[in-house]
Length: 259
Image (cartoon, rainbow, N blue to C red; front, side, top):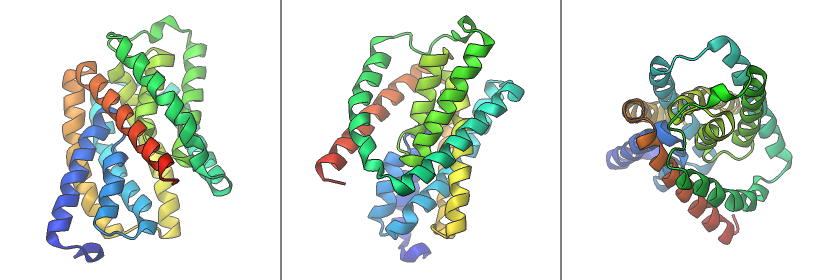
């Protein structure tokens, strides 16, 4: 069996990757489920990040396509934003080589409760598109800054990237959560592909397992994006709050464990 796993282990892993795909398509943060899942079935830790990135990239194709069919993006002004995310991701990855990403944990632990409180305290958060209140120059500038900054975070550290893309695009650009999530999926797909190419070049992934789990992720993303398009902020908002809480707990446990 793949990576020396039994059929039962592969089935459990596929189920967890499917669940993570649903969560990821709605709010990001699927890696909070998949990374521990890959480790729990005995995959070589050196291959976990690359294998997970392959599976999640395949899945993100489905959700990015589904959301983009529902929310039509103006691609010409959006492509430079995508480019900014890729450049940021590359820069973040280069920075991670010389600086320990663990230094970012205390900052995130301080920021996450504030982010969650802002979302929770505003019942109308992301329900309406308020981006029209900004000038075209303001909207472009904020979008580029968000794409570069969150892209750099993805390359440097990673957990919750899709969540941060969606929240920043909603809170700072005024997009409704559904449109912000659509843009977040495209941006996250771009940063995923950039990182995946690096893992492929270094041979740091299990190609067969990653493709197999990609099928499970694809199915999960299809279900999650269908829910997101049909229910909009009503389902995306609570899942975002859950992901923020889960990410906070994970970071706190890692910090206490000295990892």
